[in-house]
Structures are given as structure tokens and as C-alpha cells.
Image 1 (cartoon, protein in one colour):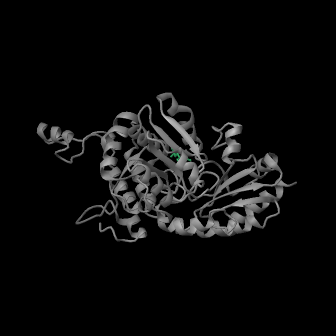
Image 2 (cartoon, rainbow, N blue to C red):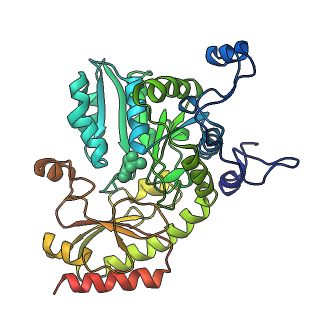
Image 3 (cartoon, protein in one colour):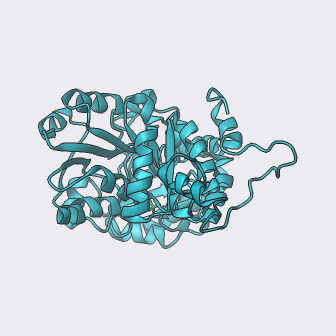
Length: 397
Ligand SMILES: Cc1ncc(COP(=O)(O)O)c(C=O)c1O
């Protein structure tokens, strides 16, 4: 499909287009392997002379449809689908890094990504340095001859820090054009932010979240230059991690993506209203949301994104006890990890999604015990606010 189509149209049409007497909806290729019409053809598929289907760990028509849609949304050459967001991150890093290499990462990132970087990459001789990407002097000091990649989320999980993708990519590439700038774009989605157009090299997503939107699959995706995506497919996914989704999950993701644009817009709108209401609630100490003028990088978010997303973090008055009272008394909102989906989800980062950080690391990452993260869904605004309001009031008793 022509790449100049608008996001809502790409969400519906890119990747699979019925023609003639085709089914309108793409069938599910629920198969592990594909038949070769001849021995010669099979050999040519393996050598790359033919572009045929081989075996689902190497690709599947349902994956290709999703990959084409997400690549078009991100404004990138190609994408590769993985079995989870962690699969996307691991497959990318296992492909790019070797023993003796140096990775620069943001100090506040999703807990399991932090765990992979801080506890496990070192076992394979990879050095990881955690910095604050809003302090560009720290970035300039951290860059070294063996720096192979830079990794951050923007907005970041869970403190919603916004980092300047263009400036960071320019600094890294001026130092060494081979450095791969990797952005986890899960919170923003390509509807609100397209990091590759701002100079980043690779985008990763937990497609479990807004891309699918319905909390019924675990999935991930890596996006970037076609040649590198081919390497990540054939090394990172095929050989190193085996992080392959099922065709059925890819089909659910293809369906979820059809409404991505409209979901993100509707969720953005009511998240802005909830953030403002939270700011005025007496039980709330501080609201962190890039759409509020009180957010330290509000201006940058306005320039870099076309909306502020559906995640809000806030510090509640009364510490951990008040946080527990609030979380135990929500009725409509689900007390559950994950985010970006049609249901409103609320959780406690320090004891849940970010529990892999030590107490000292939590303090360094700005994740306090009274911090609550909420992902606003598609229930009616009045009903969400009424539930949050009663739970906040109860937290202070
Ligand atoms: C920003 C971010 N990246 C990556 C992941 C990992 O994704 P998955 O759970 O699909 O492996 C998560 C999960 O919460 C996340 O929030």
C-alpha cells in the first residue's frame, strides 16, 4: 500500500488487502511448516534466492501482515514480530552485542528490562552504564570507543520522563555513526511518536500493550532498517532466543491494530481529563503526566509527540499504607500490571513492575513507595473518575 496513507487507514489496510474473491479478513496460517514444491525450491528458500515460506520460526504470512502494518505506522523500512516485548529487546541486543561491548541505558526503565541489563548482560561480558538522558553531559561522558548501543524509553516507565530523541541520536551518531540508538516506544505508540523519523535507529515495542490493546496476547516487535531486521530475524529470533509468536496471536494482534489510532486518540483525551482531576484531589501529592504544564519536559513532549498517552503516575499522600488502601479499594479499575489496553489498570510499581530494582536503585530511579501508575482505558470518563475518587478518599481514612 502507498506509504502516504494516514495512520487510521494504515491501521486497517496495510499488510493484508483482500482482492478478487479473497476473504476480507486474513486467514490464520496455523502451521509450523510449509511444503516445498520441489527440493530445488526448498534449497533456494533457505539460501534466500526465493522468498518462500519455510518454517514458522523463520516467518509466517500472519507475522508478515503485522510487520508491514507496524513498519508503515513507524515510518520505517521493516519490522520483525516477536513473542513478547522482552523477546524483542533480547533478540535485538543478542544480535548487536558481544562480550566486551558497552551499552548505555536510562536509569528508569521497565523492571524486567532493567533486570536483563543490570543482572544478566554482565554474565556475558557486556558492560551496562545507567544514566539520566535529560543530562546530555552525562551522555557525552558515557560514550566510549566500545559503546555499541543506547537504550531508553520515552515516555519512561514508570516516571514518564521524556527524552529528546533527536538530540540524543545526533550526539551518539556524531560520536560514532555505528552506535545503534534503540527506543522503547511502547508508551507513546507510533500514533503519537515516530522515533526513527527523529534519528533513532531501532524501535522496540511490547505489542502486548496498546498495539494489541485487548490484554489477550503477549507479543513484541522490533522496527528499523530492512537489512538489520533481517539479521535480527535470522540471528536474534531464529537462533539466539527463539522468541517467536504463534500465528493465532499474530492474527489477534492484526485485529487489535485495526483500532489503534482511534483507541489512542480517545484514551489520550480522557487521560488528560483524569490527570487534571487528580491534580486537584486532596489525597494526591504530585501528578506526573507529560500533558500537564507541571511536567518538567512538557515542552519537549509537545514538540516530540502528537499526544501525551494514556499513562499517569502519581504520588499519594500517606505513603505506602495509603497506596495499598487505595489499590485495594478500586472497583471498576482493575488492580493489574500491563498498560495501554481498553480496560483501566492500576498498579504499584515499587512492589510490582519494578520490584527487580533494589531499594537503593528504586530511590535512584525516582520510584517512591507512594507512587501509583494508572493506564486509562476506554470506560466512560465519569465512571473511571468516580471509582478513582472513592478509592482516593478511602485511602486517607
Ligand atoms: C516499556 C515496556 N517495555 C517492554 C515491556 C516488556 O513487554 P512484554 O511484557 O510484552 O514482554 C514492558 C512490559 O510491561 C514495558 O512496559
